[in-house]
Amino acid sequence: MIWSRSRLRAKRDMTGNAPSFAKLLLRIFLPFAFAYFLSYIFRGVNAVIFPYLERDIGITAADLGLLTSAFFLVFAGCMPVLGVALDRYGPRKVQIVLLAVAAFGSAMFGLAACTLHPSKVTFRSPTTIAGHPEAAVLDNLMAAGVPFRIAEDHHSISMDHDGTPPEGGPLDCRDIPDMVPILSVLAARATGRSALGHVAHVRLKESDRVASMLQLRKMGAKIEFDGNDMTFEGVEQLQGATLSSFNDHRVLMSLAVAGSIATGVTELSYPHAYRISYPEFLDHMNALGIPAAVTGRFAASVGPGTPSGHESR
Image: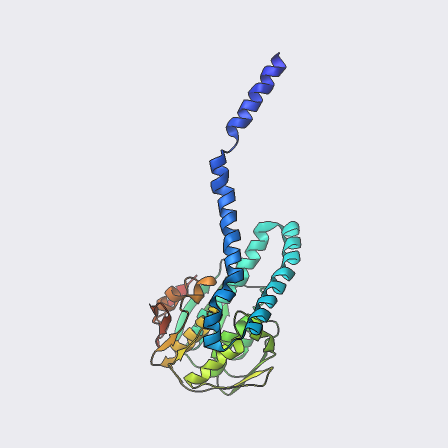
């Protein structure tokens, strides 16, 4: 009898401590359902925006099918790797690494903007820069004469210079495809001849990033593409123009940086594309002294500016 009462009391305690159905619905089911729903929106959005892609960049249904297939193949290929990493290192460490990749990619746009302007700026990172898969590009920038310093703890980059353009040179982009848009802007203004090698695969990213960055010609840049490499002859001045971001976040941010060193105003279509990876981009551009704003539903406006003493995180 005593055993039965104790067991009954334990059952009541367990029932009392168990989360209610409403809490389970709000904390678990609805967030996962929303994420699943959002995932399928992203997977099918290409079909919805196809008329705009066809109008802006002349893409065909076959091209769209190829790009979508490439996305799914890359997505599927990442799953086993991430699964093993999550099992071995746990979600916290894996998320930190993924955050570091995103943070470094975002910081490159601010670093590039300050490379092309007189600036005194410090960029701080919540994660270490050392060992980042794209950090090797910093060595190339330093070799090109960009005067920045990496802190001993590898958590910040400081720059203090007069805005002298970097020196041109060759750079192999096989392992840094996401850097090609912003490196194109730097190469367009670099002194002498520059070459971004092995960029053909960049045409299968969120947009055809080679074609997207060839729009710099409308701003006065001298660029050639032979099917594999992009070559640049640096120019002293770019001119504002009306360009398309092709709804690609890195293209939008790169062309915005180009607009910051151009005469006049540069207008870019799909102005909210930056939100996918760097939602603070416009705020940080303005904080650096570069006037950038979304002026309408379909256009972003960027004018010339001069970054000065500032600390960005």
